Image 1 (cartoon, helix red, strand yellow):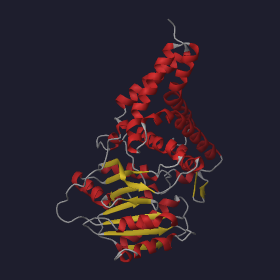
Image 2 (cartoon, helix red, strand yellow):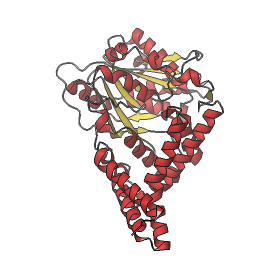
Image 3 (cartoon, rainbow, N blue to C red):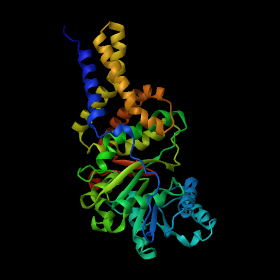
Image 4 (tube, rainbow, N blue to C red):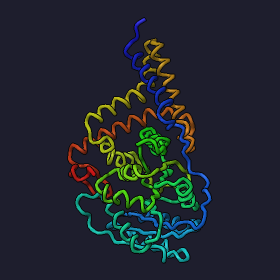
Length: 395
């Protein structure tokens, strides 16, 4: 019996899912979690948090409050770099700190200087915050890099530092819980986290014997000396995907760890499709190394893995091609099994796994649009800044 082209494609999709579930580091299990804080012998090391903030007035207060209110035995100080905000971000940060007993003394505000050529806006602000940290918190053993829209649970620092101290890690990062309330967030946010885990299997990132490195920019604790030994933040000054670039710079000299959490949350809303679209198109083509060949491979791979299974089921049902239908159905079920743990993390029902092909289609189109913008000279656009010269962002 000869197989139809659709049946062959469906079998290929099924084979792809067998490989993904069995030989991709178990990424889909979503089991790299940072739970209870290990005990630290002796004094807990000091931590200085650096927050680059550009027009974060609605959320910066909760971020500052959550950090200054940490249930942490060691010293904690916070530096907010007000990156040319025009919405009162600095005033909101100061008000939040002053509402906490002694909080005003542990918060330092830095007025961001004009962006220098060759730097991404965020990293330029981070570099200024780190320079200020050398002056106001020179003895802090760790630096926490976070954003102005992240709310940290009260034991976040204990868990991060405890993990780093117990296992001798140079970097500990958490993929924060992204907001998932609106219909578009429900459709796209868990899928975004799932795709990130597939791209960077966390068990492989956490394996010192593997070169793969990644981090999530909303919450990165880094050993200060390890950052210095890696050449400082300026070594990645032009990278738009700065979190993974930082992890790649740190890991050759020491182990790192990346995991999931439901205790650290992003406050940023993605109420409309355009909000997610802007987030993805800023860096998607950068993620592909700005390679048109990689773009073609990515499009074909997404079509094979996510779109062909349901399409094969539909074609098989209409044409009576049972091989295509069965292979597509089994691949679709395997897709749902793989997606299940991430959906559970976000407390979404398993039936919503049926929507993953739709999310994959949208993310594929977003990636294509990211490439289109690159072709027009718009490397990255975020909060009023557009980086037009690709050569400035090669790192």
